[in-house]
Length: 570
Image (cartoon, rainbow, N blue to C red; front, side, top):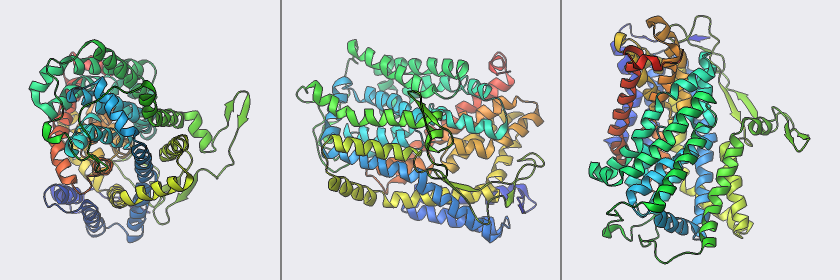
């Protein structure tokens, strides 16, 4: 058993600096040195291993185990999602349906500022709620590219919009994970996050338009931004407070899309902002040019066919996310259908492999973990049937057969998709390996303790700890698992509500989603803009940090200042 240490040099400032070095090397390599991102990921991983082995004295065997565990998780389930999304996308392009989808969206919302609200915020929130794990960014950035947004805009705006819904993503998985590691009441955590993020659900539609067109653009389309924001924020608050974390995003996104679509029936901005003339035949994600206007009217059947693959995808993702279906697919429980009880054979659809030399060989110690806490588990789960990527693959195959693709054509398209995402898969494997090395070596806890030592300002900086966790791991769920216990322990020591700070970890974390390398790679892959991740990071970094600080300010007010303190769940 190896016990973690959080100040290996006996100088907390120097230890914190070295703990931050891997992330610093990674971000600088991407944003400023122009190094290809898969090489940058390997460089960051090498730095993380050097710090873990040379400074934190982590044994070689668990360090290598953490690297393998992270890389495997990066390929499955994360890479599995991206590969199958690109496969589905390419099938829709081959049948010309993506162009029809573009034209139908352009007719519904001809103004680009409204398009980004409808697609990046509303549509993306639905996919976040149903699937999460990079799905919304991949889908919405590809659709924005089809509408002739520049690659940088398509990626950056999708990342900015994919924030406020993240804490309730994948049918509430981040909140459920937070409950599991802290022991805090699930409904209280859901309610507390639901008293923080709705403020930002109101802000984000305005913010994403301002990022694209400035405040002048916001003034032109404020009715659309306000409608989408209110129609999302109110259900987000109500469902999270009076039902639970499971259906928050799905219900709120449907309400927001419905309200905005209803508004567009009788309202248009006075001056429509269309694609600039220079971009009218801009190269799309497949390299094919197309006009930027809706053109002649389309038959309803043609438009309906264009939406078929995405409707199939939405239905399957929603079904795959239901706890009962997921338990059935994992062979953990039977599924009752029409009076019949169906059960899959055990150990067939969910294979769990303890990582040799790492599983239960690393021990977190106080103050990061309670005294006597169980050793860190390291079990790789290959749940090939219940994985989100499998639902996407099934949607692609079903659509492919409906669209009369032969099996040979489907296999050829899948091979092309694999070639397209090969470097992305390598990058994500490297990123997740880096994150797992920092987790099991304890360098992440050193950074967390540095923020937790801020005394009176801890509610503000504790929120930024959640932001840091997502920026490092690429997942609000992983950040909650990483820092949830630390937030609870520190809150109890400082006399602050543990529920407030647990929720703050998740709410602050959502703003880190736009700068984590995993999400940036997903966006660049979906738009065929791989290799420009540094430009995307520079585009979104200010927005990420500014929004995270605003969340921190709100949490500070809820912890310290009346009447905000009355918002805290008791």
